[in-house]
Amino acid sequence: MNKKKVAIIGSVGLPANYGGWETLVDNLTLHLHDRFDITVFCSSKKYNEKLKEFNGAKLKYINLNANGIQSIPYDIISIYQSIKFADTILVLGVSGCICLPLARFFGISRIIVNIDGIEWKRGKWNKFAKLFLKISERFAVKFAHFLITDNEGIQNYVFEKYAVKSHLIAYGGDLVLEKKNTQFSDKYDFLSEDYIFSVCRIEPENNLDIILKAVSLLSSHKLVIIGNWSNSAYGSDLKKKYQKFQNLYLLDPIYDQVILGNIRTNCSLYVHGHSAGGTNPSLVEAMYLGLPIVAFDVEYNRFTTQNKSLYFKSCEQLIAILKDLDNINLRKVSSDMKSIALKEYTWPKITKEYANLL
Image 1: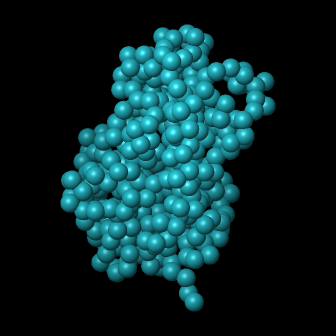
Image 2: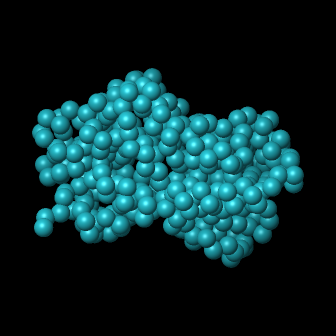
Image 3: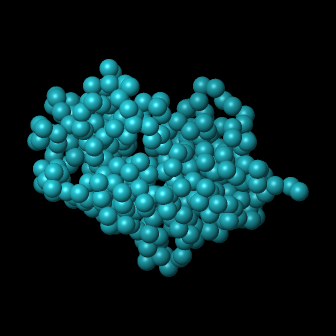
């Protein structure tokens, strides 16, 4: 029996070394390659060694970056190439969806688009890019056979704006390393102490300016943030402004999962500043680890944590929470986060839901 041919478009590619889309693709191929003939489009800019296969999936390379402004032609070219062979196209994000009418014209039997956030609202885009992304979002909704949203907030947005229903499929968090130790404390001296932690892209909608300002004013608290500080003027300016504070540790991306796991697992509080996305990977991974979480107060984060974490919307609110930690039942917050993650955010559950659509 011939397997259905599926093209996955919109991630940096495999092996997964970067972000949420890549982890999703890694798990989809790992769990579903025996049921589907999967091809993953990859950015050749990010791989010195260009494998032909990974996790049982074929890899095709596009000579563009998968993120930033190049993500638009990257996705469009990937969609165009997939028309030649795919039964189903799974598009991650809306950047290239302006060309979906072409895919429909050529008779692709199934186009699935995952709208993981309101992309045009992100602060990194200029006015022209935002207008383009608004149009691309509209085309995604109009021309996809099925829509996936990973959070009730995004699902509600799509229905209220376009009167179109989407399939709610979240994100898994159950593959993060849970081992708690301080084996890297010689390199990262904060590991042997209490510290607040966050890992994210350094972008305005992640509200790092609020988080950094709050903790910089509380010298008794330590904050560790891992992110791509040098990728933008925003990140470079933040790092230049706050790296002088001895209680702030601003680290560049760490791709060694053992080291990253140690730093994340040992923290005493996880702070999540994202405000533009849906169900964020780093948030559900922190939940799976049973970390106490303080999240930026938007509906996406409240839906993900089911209103059971701590929330802030300003520097003053975050400072108040941090000053009052001794009076907050963080053990209860941790337990709630872990219980929700075990029920809602595991990869076997998530990939099965994708398989039902593919």
